[in-house]
Image (tube, rainbow, N blue to C red):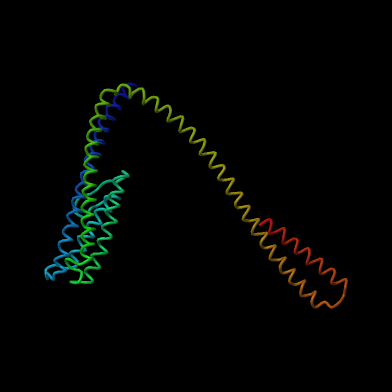
Length: 274
């Protein structure tokens, strides 16, 4: 048993090292994506200025292609997946600070897209030196600054990840014997937790089943009460019609009033039940 756990612990050591290495190397596609975002936005900025000066070789589709590619890269950083440039970001970006940084760049990029569209619609009037051009430049340089800050934060995380990976591997190398005992204890605790969770699950399922039966009963009772209330409404309305056409017979009127009052009280009771 102990020998088997020792072998498992050694395999765990190798597996942990590979996971740590993958975690570190997984940040490099993110860093590359940030660089590509800066490049795409810069090229879109350059082409837009040439487009507004009337350069026939520059088309609006080229500008939007760059901006859309930058947006796609940011989405891939947040959600994971293909970057559209032949490489993948395997996992979504989960660290809060970095996610917030990417989301800030996304917001600025969206603003840049809106201004770009407005400048392209207005043409030469929104060219170099215009108020809209100044606003455009402000947003453009803000994106570059946000991307630089994001790149610096990611570089710091890569450095921390490398240091943590080394510490983690050294720690496991020095403590793998303790892992054997901890593994046995963990297996025992896990089995106990599994049993407790299974018992809690059975209790929850039983309570849920009772709640569903009570809910079904409540719906059935509510439906019946609603139908009876409708019947009482028909009785009351019919009684009122008979009362109006029944003439001046006091006994008949008294009995009709008794029916109306009884129907009203029954209807009130049913409304309380509902």
